[in-house]
Image (tube, rainbow, N blue to C red; front, side, top):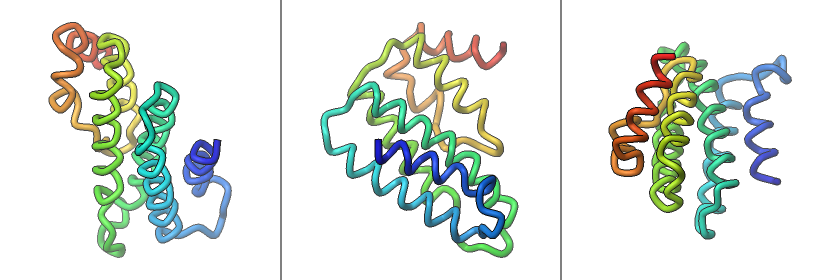
Length: 143
């Protein structure tokens, strides 16, 4: 519950705080990542994978603001996005969700990114997706 709340709060910064700045986004992203990494030492669950996917969506959205301000802010969005992506891949490797379902989920995650997603799909997920999951990913990307 705490991690879900933290992810929701991070995602709400641009909409709920009229006085936010880029520092708030970076700090929220770092806090979100730190909490997720703490929880990740526990045995993986499908519910936790859902939370990580929501964090990926949130960070992909927030990272767009940093991309837009590349000339005035020194934090690279990948400093948070890459570890989130690595955590997601690790959970998928451990949990081995249904490949067809995962292919669709990955396509939706990447498709919802405002700039670029840090998920290295489908290439990084090839072992988890297999032939059927890769086909589902391709189909979902073209729908």
